[in-house]
Length: 226
Image 1 (cartoon, helix red, strand yellow):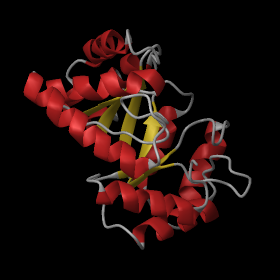
Image 2: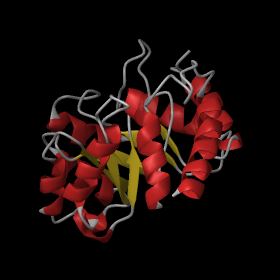
Image 3: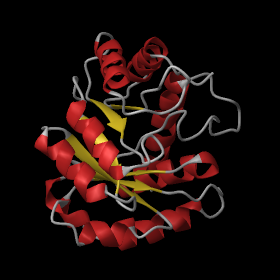
Image 4: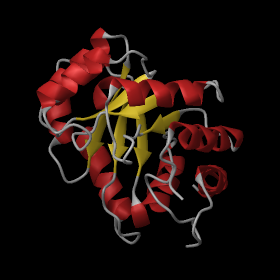
């Protein structure tokens, strides 16, 4: 089951860290289970997770959580508890303003550059590019047969990432091919129920901890074979 409440998210984060995760990315939820930037939900989620783990914790600022970019910025400025970092999807309307609001509050920015969008081009021209914590190269191709090629195309479009570290990850069927490519290229990566519900062999994952444990095995194996 995908965790929704602050307690469940904290439990999932604890399992992921126990399996070796060194950083946590979460989507705080509203009482009805929708992604939200609400100050109350963000604070409750961060407090619950930080009571269990001592690693950096980040949240999403995706437009689906707050479609109006002006309201999105207002939400961020009203947060009573601050994450260590937050992802900003550079192809979304208002990305520059959202990133600036986070930086103003001392929150690290992960620049989400999705395949199939103009995010990489926008980021390359952004005056904030050199100030972000890292680039999240997000492969949206869910086909395991083509995801690696899509990832390589995305990485070429990102180029030197304006000197920032790059974290490569995929989604659905592309999750494991993208992770193995990250290992071969020496890039950071991530995995979780947000990305895929399945283990490399196709079995349903029991939770984030099991996905992270599998990711370590896949990462080391891919490194050795490169």
